[in-house]
Image 1 (tube, rainbow, N blue to C red):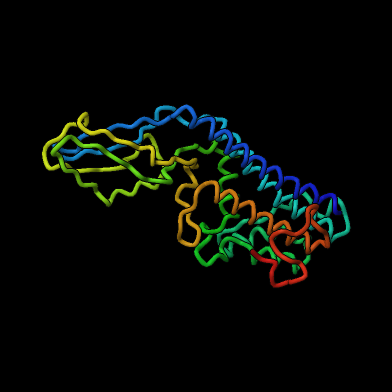
Image 2: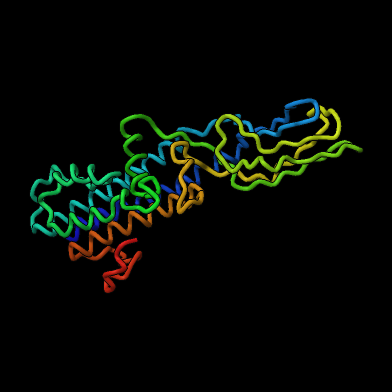
Amino acid sequence: MQDLYLAAFARHNRAVSKRREFARAWGKYIDVHPWDIDVRNVDPSTLEILAVTREPAPAELALIFSEWLAALRAALDNGLYALAAATSGQNPPPQAERLQYPVCSTPEEFKKQAKRLTSLPEHVIEALEKSQPYQSPYGPESNLTYWIHELARKDRHRTLHVGLGRVDEHRIRVAAPPGVEIEFDTSVKPYSQIEGELVVARLTANRPIHPHEIKADLRGVAIAPEIQAWAGFTLNGASQTLQDRMIYTEIFVRNHLENMAVMGAAVPPDGFKTFDPSQPADGAA
């Protein structure tokens, strides 16, 4: 059944190539400088500096992200199919049409999904339950498998995920007229996505001031890609860039595939990368 595992890992490798394609497409998008800078009065002495979307992210980004999601979700399903074939010694395995890698947010949901897995050995079902999102100490939404399932489901059945820009670095310089003192509002922390426009700085002058009197240099503001539906995700309480999230998710899925390979007495085509199979306690990421 080694060939079935090869197909599952090939799906995973396809996702890796799609992430790199996504990065190249993002680079082409920002090369056209799709954001403008606007300076507006909040009151006569207070100004806000905003990043304003002039050119929305192209549909190509959403399509590539869709393909990345689909490849990872399919890799999990293909890995489970390979495991079912390996443990049964049959291809197709018993009840093949019912097999789907379970991703559950509650124990009750897993019990329902487990009815589709009755052809698998009990120890496999137990291992699958241990990896479920509801087992995560920070809740199911802190689990990357949860996000692969949710994002892929919405992508398939609803619409493509919207690509956005996200402020990842924030260093703004301003030049005020002679004799004018300004103070930045330190409560403005715009490390978030730009949905239409985003306030990146707010400053107050010691006299009424017009936007044309201020020169703003935003070359220290770095804008990275973001996916709207995934923008609020945190890992262990900390925000991650989209690039890091995608890489971590690939590692997480790879770990699941390698665990299913071990249970099916198979070896990944390029070996084990997320744990040492000679150390059983190392199997779970």
